[in-house]
Image (tube, rainbow, N blue to C red; front, side, top):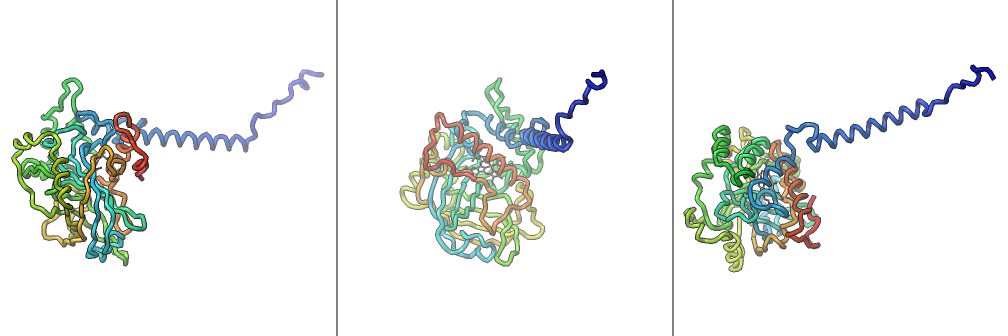
Length: 366
Ligand code: HEM
């Protein structure tokens, strides 16, 4: 056999068609890995992610494990929303048609420490989930301030960082918060409210405002911009801030239990419709007071329960969970809230050591 004959050309390991297919599969795997890396913030360390926001929220003192990473101290309630039908011409949302709809809600204070003293809760909140008979839900988180402190997620993050506890001193730096407000003039309406509004010793005498704008869509498909509030039926009783210290660490839940044991508490759901010049995407700006308002019905709070084993514990009050007939606006806070609430929920649901989770409420999230 000649030398030439012995060198037979080797058959290629893969045909060109197989190679093309392998390249394609490799490309898909790489693109998926890059997408995960991007979503996780590994490719863009400076990018603001829900994880980064929630991490900053978690570093404002106390032990937030197993608890909400904002509005961390609260109590559950149950009741009904009695819709009077007046808002049904503005929206096809089933719970705006005349009727009674089940509600699971939560009162809270906007702090990061679940064991914070109630007197540190400058912002009080109410969250609600209203369920229609066909299973559609309207979830909302509302604060007692008339405006929100910032208009966008980046400013929210920067303000949260300014409130974080320094691990070396064990304390937050009050000068950092002052610097934030000095450099963010759009936050001054909130700062003015925080400095001047009356303190009270109750969740029951507060009006809670949705603050973000949403779209209400009627049966003909017309869409109108609106905000909403839960207006308290009782007048606030001002209490000097110094006097709150004498009421103990948990006066809000005590007050709630004592009031509910004497009878139901009520709020009116007020929808406020925007004029064309009102901003849809800036929750730091109040709309003028003369806008069209519609009283859509009454929230009746019938029962209060502790958060540790109450029915609100495992609800994520994501404000973008809405029924047909109500839709998000272009407010940039809304998608940021949705993503951050989901991250916070995932963390607290997994951190069950000193906060045991029971079957009845598990998995109540979307
Ligand atoms: C970018 C802006 C915001 C971020 C990142 C943010 C973040 C959060 C997070 C992480 C939670 C805990 C959620 C959970 O674990 O279930 C929370 C709770 C809450 N937030 Fe926000 N928030 C923002 C804006 C707002 C605004 C504009 C309002 C008022 C309209 C608001 C009202 C509430 C309320 C009421 C709760 C308590 C809900 C409950 O009781 O479960 N937040 N927030």
